[in-house]
Length: 201
Ligand SMILES: Cc1cc2nc3c(=O)[nH]c(=O)nc-3n(C[C@H](O)[C@H](O)[C@H](O)COP(=O)(O)O)c2cc1C
Image (cartoon, rainbow, N blue to C red; front, side, top):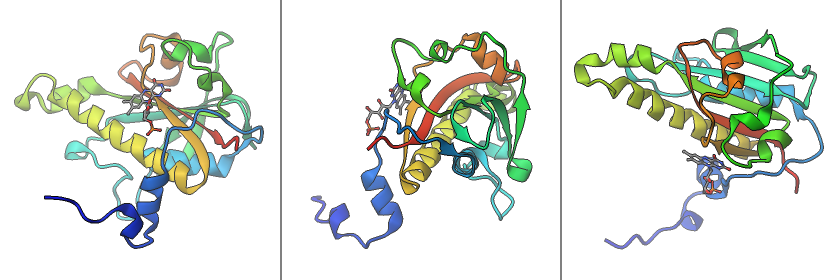
């Protein structure tokens, strides 16, 4: 079957437009990211919805994801590491070791990790998920957690698009970087980092 319609011919629906415009943006403007924008992006990843759920679907509503943010240039927020809490849409400041080196989070040279005003770190408790779904296979739970993280990633990228911000997902990460251990509980496996900020153009 040949598809005879294209995004141009669809109704000027905002989601069509956001999907059409979305792309990875790895350069950031000089202005700080507003704290209110950062919290909206965090909410997109794992916030509570008014229906009592969360912004991402979750297998058996297990909610295995953990979300943290590392801010260097966010208006109204001190440089530091914070954990996002879904309840009350709030941030908890975490101790930041002097040896926190952003460039260690990614594999290879990824300067956008250093240049982004804020990073969002997403990890998952894959062990808990594997136990929960053990009757479906040894790694089923981890697969579900990875799928959920992908949904969170796309939520953030599309929200960034609607806010005319720059964002890129870095999943080429060094899972064993000590920086992730500062951000997450020991049970949480790091999965990705999202670089976030104002656009440069
Ligand atoms: C699972 C996944 C991992 C990715 N990892 C990285 C990464 O480590 N570094 C990076 O700069 N971009 C990364 N990206 C972004 C891709 O490079 C990008 O989506 C791709 O080049 C297509 O471009 P677009 O997003 O502008 O459409 C990743 C994307 C996905 C979905």
